[in-house]
Image 1: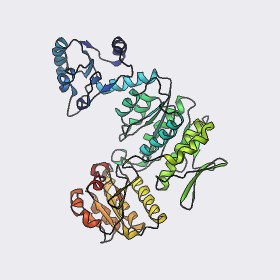
Image 2: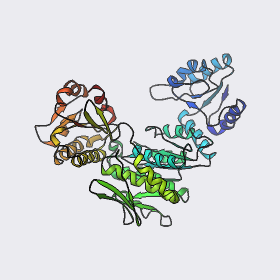
Image 3: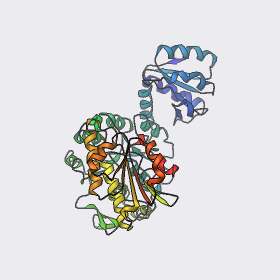
Image 4: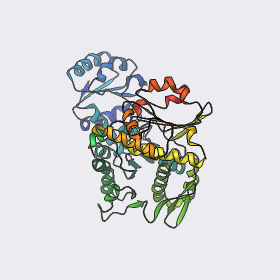
Length: 463
């Protein structure tokens, strides 16, 4: 058994251990016993309601070469017991297993010479991350990795960094937060070179209370990039809160977006991007809504600023981007077109998505009475939840929506805001599903959006 209190004391031992066994120094680490694969290092995380040390016997029976756990009486007892019978497994006990993972990722980052493009924001993070990856991977195929799904937190960011291989030149890193101080921790781990903030919206207000506090949190990425060197940062000047960052670092040059030089242009049903004296056509048949074309333009501008000589390649990549499932995508089922933006929701993203869908109906000359809107809870809004749901209900009414269905624990507040007996309210998704077949009669387009807890996209499967 080897016992260490800190990562710094243990790191050379780990490197030597991996070298002797011919294992990759990118550290194939697992923290979930259900997903463990032979040969991986297992780190037992201790949470509020569980401790990964409970899976020690199960893991080491699969020839685990390296088992790392957090200091506790049980950990010491278990490691002492099994280190005798499983001498081929190296055991390391650390002070804090989560901090250990973060420190390990920091070390891996320090040993890598590539560059990180990071982003955060209240809405559109994952879509923008996918857009950035689409552009970068188009320029450097096989040499770019990106955050998978929405693994953008205190563990997701380290695990993205662990995927860096020798051939990796760039990482597209999404950073998420729902409590103050988290973005700074992620920046300290990853040390991003370039980046952008999509916007500042009404996200996680249960913990941040105000949009101004959201700005303080998200802007940690901006400060990190400004302090880390001569990195490129795209500032969304359309956002009334982000614009306040413009003069924070007088000696640094920002790439301003939605200003006099670089801005989105709409011509009839198409969008274009004015970038200095050049107009770039943003034709993409897979995107709906101004907000998504803003994300596309913002991504293009950042990559273009890094590789201006590649503009012809970048422009060809614009039309081929496709959003991931659950994020502003169209799916057809039994002759009905579902617009699924049901991965998550807050008031800002709900308004943007509703506008985008309404814009689509108008462009396609689809009658409003052929459309069904299914709108659900927006979570993590704290004491503001009732009022913010009422505001969304009123917004739905202002758009001229004829057939809204409100579902979830906040559905009555949505109904109060809509102020019309024509709306239908269900307190649970199960009630909605029981009546779905009747609700779909005569409808050929369906809008779906709510927070993750409702998983509204499952409605498509049962249609």
